[in-house]
Image 1 (cartoon, each protein chain N blue to C red):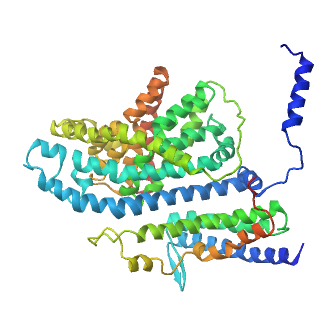
Image 2: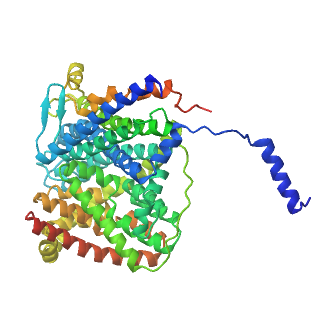
Image 3: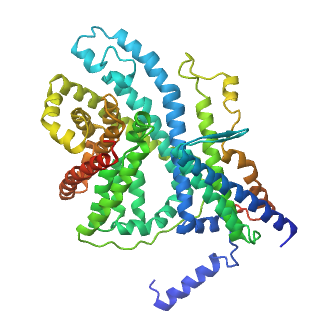
Length: 404
Length: 154
């Protein structure tokens, strides 16, 4: 049956009359709250408070309760002495690879596959990711994230993006791999490239956040400050340099509501499952390969060769080259490794920022490759330049402040 | 505007001033680099709780103050509610931090879990301003239901 134009509209009217209930809409608290959280004057303070809550829950539950409260004791007081005693021949290569330093008092110092590898994976990173994804899922399912996208739209337009760019940015704080995939929600190639580069450069993943919290709890704020400034600064520069469009968005903002428990659990499981099955083998492999490189004298050789760049330009010890190699496999592991290198607090800040920005981990690298090899090559080119410039700037700031 | 509305305006006006005042004190003590303890009250001096938390307290107090005029209006009431919600975020985070520190036994102890008395003693005063102001800010929930502003589950 074919309907004419008028008949079709008549049918629409009839369906609407039968199905739509007309009446006077009464404004509700959640409606007004929704409005207030997208207006800059009231929305930005709320965003500052939500971020505070996010970080506070993350540090209290993952850091104080799980890692410091139970995992450190479990691994350092029980597991480490047992492995050190049970594994035969502390002088052997296998002992070095799997148990690490026989005189170590903590799993951080030992740096063996079974000691540091397991501690980093299950003692620090896993609890950190669980808590991170829980809070993020609650924010997402409650309807706050779309409002944050609207709120930050103006700022993100200045760096060539729009409000939805907050999705890959926040996802990147969990893991950079889904964040790279999430850049597809941006419309133009220019936007996707800028977002991909900024995620790879300035967004530390949840695993790295967990380790940073453990290794540099006092100075982590400065690392964040450098990363946020870098995100805004290089985003602005890339927006000016790269040709292309930055269209407006139309966002469907849902009402605030209480998240459904089963959905939260399902999402958390999906996200942490990836870590358990994909990332944990990389952590263990990372420790193994780095130990092999140390045994072969390759890291020591690289340290000597690259010393002028590291010591003179970046202002960090030449030994930092070891963690930077590890960072290609796992950045969390690299930060753990940095904790064993003697450094001043400012050098530690510089080194952690360098580990974050210098190169994406191998999993992110593969994700970027899937988005297009041309984009990957261009992003890597930008990465190299940014690391060199920004690393030097950070060192320069340290010199000016008299702390480098 | 009924007497109840007037009373609510005055009540949240005073609470708003207190919240803003404590927030500013938080920030000033962070700048001075000194903590402050007086009776039940404890004001920390670290960046996270002092400066960042203090800023949120200031915002919370200002939201309350901006909403007290014509509080019977939903738009205005929601501003007060939002101000109280910021105090809840801070107080909730402070209480959670105490809880997370109280559950495990100390690093010197061979046990994993704290004793019950040890756990309870961690919650002893002094408290941060947000925790002290928490009961006063919860009054907004009573008004939310009394005045029929709560969302129905249709």
